[in-house]
Image 1 (cartoon, each protein chain N blue to C red):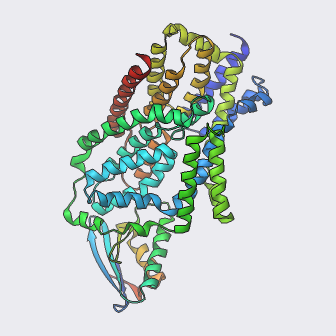
Image 2: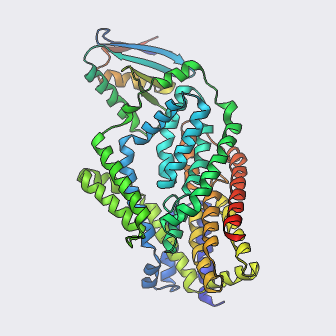
Image 3: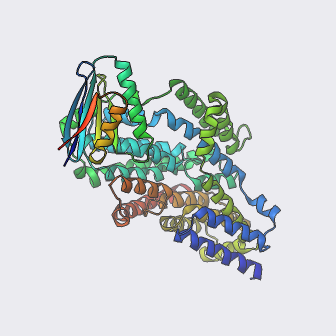
Length: 426
Length: 96
């Protein structure tokens, strides 16, 4: 191994260690690492820029703009209260409905955004019913990570995979991942009932209060709501058809975002651009350049060779190894840098002779997304919900979550394993 | 310990108040100039909505036009003063 490759590995591992340590913001670390990749001459600036996946970035920015404006309409609160009333104020049924809404929302919106929209209305409903919010929040964390696995736009790992592999279109994600995700989410519902039913009993008087709520009062500007719904509908339709029109998913998301800004006017532009999570965008930029260092110095190619030797080039072994490795890694580490490293490695495994890469991609997506449920630090949504809950006087401890999340994660990955084996590997 | 007391015009609105597990629950019924009264309550809701604490003061608009508000114990005074600021109360005072 030459000096440049060793330099790239050391820099990557150091960056990774600092990201895991969480002493300095992950974006600062990733960007510092990326700049060092160029300064140390591991990759020149032109090549580094070439490795930045602007499709991933464009898709994230476009969706963040659309969601930031839609969030102001009160739509999510309206849906949640309507669901709670549909459940006749019964806390168990409300918990299940909010979990399903979170899963569905996460399939089409970023997980963090979905939980940020769901948490306030969950506090509002649970306060009315005088039941503890934590069972509802844990069910929503798990459902957000599960639901996000269903589509190309649901979770950053899927966005990255879909962007790197042109054949994996929005429809391909939907037809390959959504069916098993629906099964997993349905299997989780009785588990939620078993785990939480005794903790969330309420009185008939409380249920009656909830039933008296006027959900329509949650909806603000109706004209804005109509515009948001039309643009969201068109954008999702665009995702379904993006391959037919030879458009990248980022083009669809950005078209939707700027159509919405065109319709809503300049006053929303500042708000929307302010709400774009620029630290996340730059975190991606940094990671793409760091991984470029590993790719250009031949490290990824060598790792792929080792992986092929380990599995004997067998697709089944490789797919299951990727599934479980991704799940366990994602439970304890940030799944975004992990997936950023795995993508070129799987591509290289293809270059080195593995013919059918499709099961490997689905293994990576299922493992990286479902693995996020394993611990409180497994996914950004988990940390955000736990942080908000703690701030409101309802802390969720690492161990409290681990006891539920890790078991649920193992269960969902076993189900995914069976699905992968039966559908692609048998 | 001194408690913040308040007084309102019973011809304009009716306010029910009861303590419940560390919270104070209010029930507002606007009797006169409904639009203005509800607009004031909405402005108070937005003021608490815009701060970073989610569970300080929670508003529940009801089908019958009444508004239920659940106030966390430690936000009681702040809420009463917001009602005063928006002229839903006539006066507030401390009582031992």
